[in-house]
Length: 418
View (tube, rainbow, N blue to C red):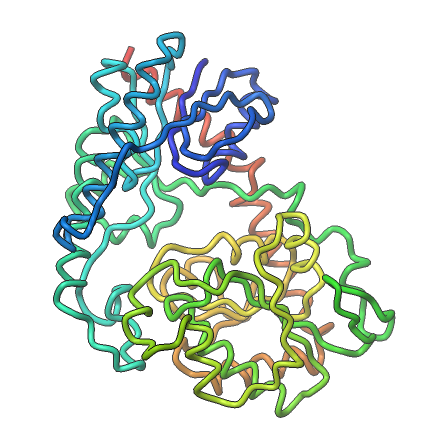
């Protein structure tokens, strides 16, 4: 069996599945990507480079589509030059313009598209209008662009033979007429990396030594809190986290916060409201007083270091608007961390309050702080929540659990085309 994956980034959503297909099943895997680098783990990489992209001359609302078309073209040309590649199945990430033109190259070879999100403009339950607390008006142009961003997604939905999404929440965002085509299959958490099995990393309070964590010395009784986000932005509640963190410090000063991520905006339109500040992080810090000696901003971390940090933490805080669920939440749950998450639909799909984690109202920093303090005053008492979270991931979302389902999905789609 030969699977062709298409994604501008590598390994992205597909790398860990692809490596398992090679190692466990002996399948042949090709990965078309714009990320340069050597072949890894038996996965043959084909690199494509869009010849152009959107410019200021393009309408603001059509620039995403312009970029996806250039991606479609680049993928097509790179693979057309490789006549030796003859896949039995094509799997691509929709929205980037990955697979649309491949019908002309590979005929009836079945195409599966992975879908993350369908954009909308409606109300406070959508990603665009959710942060009503900031009182930032959503420009008409941004609403129009949200609708236009679905153009390639709709083309892919029509073109693909089968489709999947990682969560029920993400499926629910798509138009009703397309939902029957969408199968829910999570990406799969690699539990050989993200797990809480090394109990030495999180010993009972009375048995803790002083230790160095990511270059910072942490005393035995100091509580550890983590926050992870690819970018520090309003969509992921960075400002709410910081407000809650300072309230925690005021009442329980023997605490350190490890903040993982980059000082950039990945989603939404925060940059249009910052009033001269160079980042949302700077905007947040300028509006309140924070004891920054309690915060350790780590930057992005490789998976091994992130897993060790999540297996060490006393409490992990995660917030998101109604949007794509972050891998970091699932990684933290898989590491047996006690997670305090926002009471928003994507998080509620994974966390049942008081069973495998805790929830607080997204907009209520006081409530986040109060719930966090109950954990930090007696972390050992809340360990059963982390254990239940890890068990849930192992049973429902771990790669060993997901891989057979994904392989069965692939094989069913191929059989339907025979």
